[in-house]
Amino acid sequence: MNHFPMTLKGVEILRKELNELKTIKRPRIIASIAAAREFGDLKENAEYHAAREEQIFCEGRIKEIQNKLSNAQIIDITQIPKTGKAIFGSTVSILNIHTKEKFTYCIVGDDESDFKKNLISINSPIARGLIGKKYNDIAIINTPGGHVKYKILKVEYL
Image (cartoon, rainbow, N blue to C red):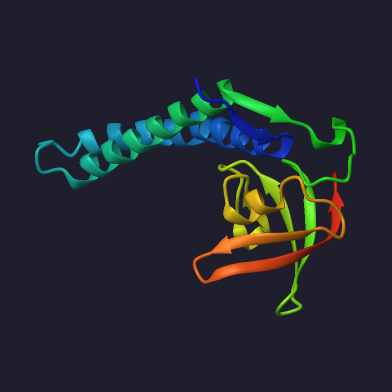
């Protein structure tokens, strides 16, 4: 049995999606299927087939979310002793030593990651390189373009 590490916020987002799928999307799809059946012959009924396809996707996503929530290892970063090290759930500010660019990332679970929002997966190369590092440490990240060095500017437990 696999456990999925998640932050409290990530669990909240999945629960909200699950609730929306069960209470809004599922009933809407059922109504669409019922309406499409009234058009007659189901073999050539595009509306019916589209609604059934959507239902299959929705039910699959519901099962997937339920599985993840039942196997979630919920980590509340505010309850973890502040050691100054980058860990799951921490927010890390870094400086690319070569380009002098600054970045801030929060290390989260796979389902929560969104690079555009600076949420990086615990399994990403950047996060793996940052884990265990402290203020002023140098992290060497293996990228397709070679090794990139980052200096840790700040580790926060938000």
